Image 1 (cartoon, rainbow, N blue to C red):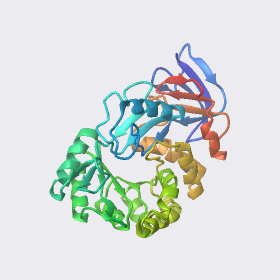
Image 2 (cartoon, rainbow, N blue to C red):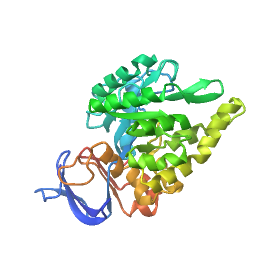
Image 3 (cartoon, rainbow, N blue to C red):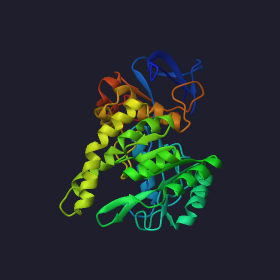
Image 4 (tube, helix red, strand yellow):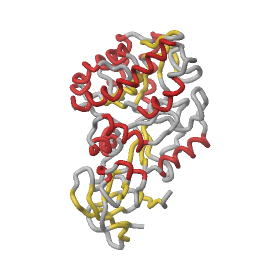
Length: 353
């Protein structure tokens, strides 16, 4: 069915007409189109820039049934695309290829030092194999994900590989045309990642504030995944957690909004991601706004800005047909993001959830 939509098109904010024929947007009239709406706000499909679908729990194997369920849940939320920065095993080729699944950018299997990640997860290799393993994953998936810091003792968290290895892996991945996402939740890890010039920092807990200008200058994106930390707050701040880790987590969570605000003011690209388990992307967008992003840019972090990073156009001629329609401007009240009046994802008009 060919569709016609008219409304205020974000992010530009100009009123216009859009046609959808299959999984393509046209800005030129198409004959026989059914008019879906003549008013409202048209928003490019949402993007979860950091999530791990198909996983029941940390350390568990990838589960196909869960992948199907998570994919359906993303679409119900209006999430048209996801970036999976490392999964328990390689994502099956059908995930992201089917019309009832979100579009998928993935980073293969995470690369970590031996004992530097959850037991049973990732390719945990000795120092001399980290660079070649990162290149293998990037060559397969386009992105590679490196875990460069982790729990180093019962009550400590720090680097698990040298700054030199992080820099060499980054150069090698870039040399084969790949991009590199780095998991880091320590000051030393963030310094190593920024010095290396990685493409994105995942989490960034404890990233030194003075690094934000360099993040911006090197075009390194920041994906704060605040939703995941907030979900862990009760567990990680309990007396059962060793004092050192409790302090690491508590101080990191407390300073995280300031990090995001200072990075945003410096011009760093901020992206919205929910991590594990797959959570509410719209809640993450609202957290970004509460941290200090303008509502426009907070929405962009989970829509047009994230689409740009993944090579997905927004609402323009020839773009993939991912459009959410809202009766009023969602930037005036971001809670409205949970209630689109229409969802056109991958060119399909979806029924209300």
